[in-house]
Image (cartoon, rainbow, N blue to C red; front, side, top):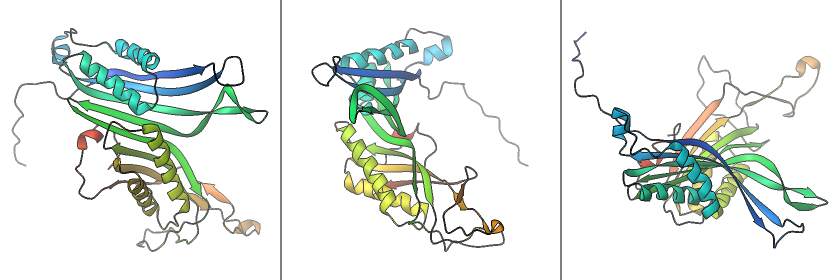
Length: 312
């Protein structure tokens, strides 16, 4: 074995960021001029916000000098103050406003990372009508957004997670290689289920993010439902392709989709047939499909994805 030279050189600080994580924020907007009750009609926006700053923070790390450290508590307070002063509107726009504030207010802050999860609520129906100020969490999926600023460059990445979908037919899986370790039977009719995590990168910061989110989400779900699938990989690609074709403001989209296996239960020992009616829903192990769907020839933006782990 060859001898290795010991590494030499001064120990220095590498890439770093810091801030306040998971600031729980609920914003109620009251409009006394609308609604049937005395309190008017209310709107609810429910977010989990993380703020992280980047810049010249070497003295704090190497000398304990806090003169340029914007306290994480101050970052938390800014989140709440901005929710009042600016409203939210969309998680993307709120993060852009928040991030630009820190970059503009502190000369040594060159950029940062701001992330939000948004939780959806819908109105509780009472006597057949949606209530003005009573809500129930929908639990269908969590909306996500990340804004990264580096000097004059800003990246906006948005998406969704925990979007569990299932189709009870219209899915096949066959034609795969077989060897001495293969036991999986081929099928022309199976349950296809997954929990979609998707992130997409916008090409601009001046967009109607709420309308785009609704449209992209609906396109992804409609494609999952309508496509006759021969593999989850094919479904993933067609979902991404449909979104990119319909929305030119999206540069690329990344997916992570576990295959939530549903195995047909053998009921023959009980003298019963099972024509694709009774299944065992297995939670693990599971197939995990991850891929990027992108526009050919588009300029890559690796910095936009640098802090979003677990994707191709």
